[in-house]
Image (tube, rainbow, N blue to C red; front, top):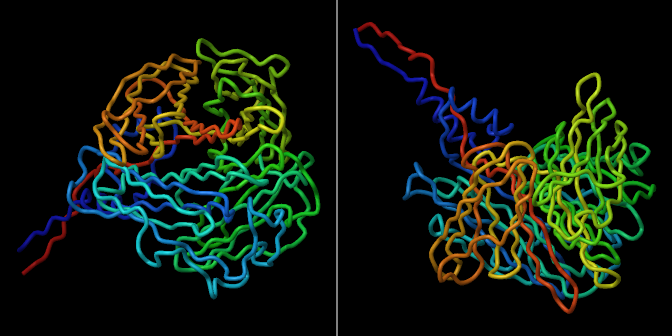
Length: 526
């Protein structure tokens, strides 16, 4: 008789390697610490990222920066990372931030019904963009945005855990003038984007990118101050395989709303979704998705010189939400004058103007349940921030941001203009911040900081020793309570305080693999 022993641990590890594109690591820091006792955390083996079309403006340029941190326990030899151009409809003439005044000249800009036939790709064909050579060293490239498409990329092996790609675009003139930045995102099936607009002074395009080999069917629903905005069409959006489709939000409804929330749902397949918001007076930037609905919300990194801040909140459930509003500054958390609490009706978008809420000091907004009977109601939220005044205004968006469980990275930092903001809503926390080598060389530098509970710490991140070119900054939570983070990149031009803010949720570079309770044995008789 022969006995063959099959270990469940090996099966679980193999499952993690295939499915560990970081979908199993959500939840709070406390939950993660508790689950660590019952599970082993292993590096993910494959990651997917989607970068939207930067702009079609002729007076713009885009910098892409890709980076994977060095990690312990990762095979140092195998793996690849790179991105390829997505397809766009051949006759798509929608032009976010371009010269057509934001008009939707093609049905494809509205419903993407051409099936992707006759699409175009960027110069370079099938040659991967931003291939990494080694973890710990970023790579960068610059493109004319007029010829830069959306990008679809994968990283595997040693490059998968924490792989990050940043897209930073400068538009020098026109209605889309400004600095637009976004971290390329993982595909999903559900996105909430509070802060969009169908107002006549805004041109908001949602970019839908499909990374897979089958078409995706997507529903778009808009919610204004009085509830859902009546749709002008009942058709779903079809996003062809490995393609991107821009949709002008004002074509989805005849109703105008200065503050609204967009819900993006994939009926089939999975997509990436991000909104490019173009304001006729205040410039433009990317509006990324909010963290998943939560009863407590953190919006990190309001600049100290913000001239105005507008809070947009939506309650997607069946119950109203009553929230406390606090501003966590450098020394403590206070209640903004006149905005002690906020009532958000179910299914309706609530927006409030906070003015120059930071009063010359950096801060972060914290929303928590007001209390009372019954369970708290989850919400999604975002903040529209303005710097400058009059014709020299520039705008950016900060969505509600999930806590860093272990680490998070901002890929594109410059020797001047980068500000890192960390907020600890409850207990104090200790973090390590590491500046990578520059794209042109240098050595990494790390520093450790403490963030006191209920405060925001804003700082210039460390710089690489003797480094040249863009570099990455990684934040690692070492101990203490939850930490939320964002990074501001400021590049003033001709008196306009151009800036963009990217939130830093956890990079989900590891996956929890439950420990096997027993071995499975098969008995075979000779």
